[in-house]
Amino acid sequence: MKILVTGGAGYIGSITTAELVQAGHDVVVFDNLYQGHADAVHPEAAFVQGDLADQAALKRLFAEHRGIDGIMHFASYTLVGESMEQPLMYLRDNLVNAANLLEQAVAHDVGRFILSSTANLFDDPERMPIDENERIVPGSPYGESKFFVERLLHWFARIHGLRYACLRYFNACGDTPGRGEDHDPETHLIPIVLQVALGQRRHITVFGDDYDTPDGTCVRDYIHVVDLAQAHILAMEALDQLGSRKYNLGNGSGFSVLEVIETARRVTGHPIPHVVGPRRPGDPAVLIASSETIRRELGWQPRYTELEDIIRSAWEWHQAHPHGYAK
Ligand code: UDP
Image 1 (cartoon, helix red, strand yellow):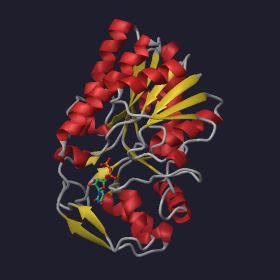
Image 2 (cartoon, protein in one colour):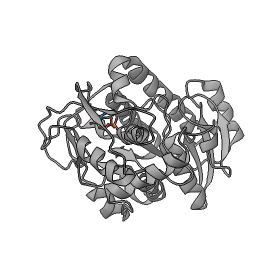
Image 3 (cartoon, helix red, strand yellow):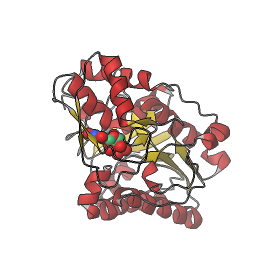
């Protein structure tokens, strides 16, 4: 298939692009390089630098790359904490950018769409692990903006016959030898912990130790980015047969912030000092996924089930690229 990947220079988008190319798909990457890196784009993918807010650029993209079979939409603002400080960046821009993309998708008869959605839809879960029947309570403007886009897709499916899958990721992490996580500023737990191990930071600050969890720190479900990428490919390939779908994607087990730090100490051999700071606004106490639906319907099986293996894959990339990508 010919797949348009928005955000294909970013962390999850670039690794998914590489997996798509390896699986024999033809890939066009569209990315504004706001957080992405040109070096992360697989050399066999066509790369177009542009912004989803720029409707003329999007029209040119679809005019120049005809015959797109499906879209994987990664490009968006993605930070819970930032969204609590700058809500319109999320509530407006993530929505408008997705609407611009969908307008062109429909105009060019692209019938398949995979959305990077989020576990931040589940701020107040009634059951743990969280399955697809859980009620939606966005935990932040970030989560709400993803819910807006899920609703856009619902209406585009009803009105235009689009087939879509929403993949609600829990905590994406881990790297591949060629591509890894490189944000500026970095806000995610595992890369920050590894920056301490590399001597680039003195300590990690744990955001709150007074949550209602066994050790008081937040519990998350950490899923390797290659397993996420494989889920995207399976979901895209199954859309024609199964129709639109929503899947929660995680490993099914939770680890606290302190357990992540402890595992990273074992993997790196570094003491990784930590200090406890205040809670980060927008963080729920526990998020653990049930991915039974995607396992059953698509036969998805995560390859990385052990946190230690996930952190090791990230440690290898961070040691080889201590300052991230060159560009
Ligand atoms: N976290 C932390 N210190 C940091 C970064 C993150 O204690 O410097 C915690 C954060 O509060 C959350 C977990 O680590 O409970 C995972 O956060 P991350 O930002 O990696 O992912 P998110 O859960 O926001 O998707």
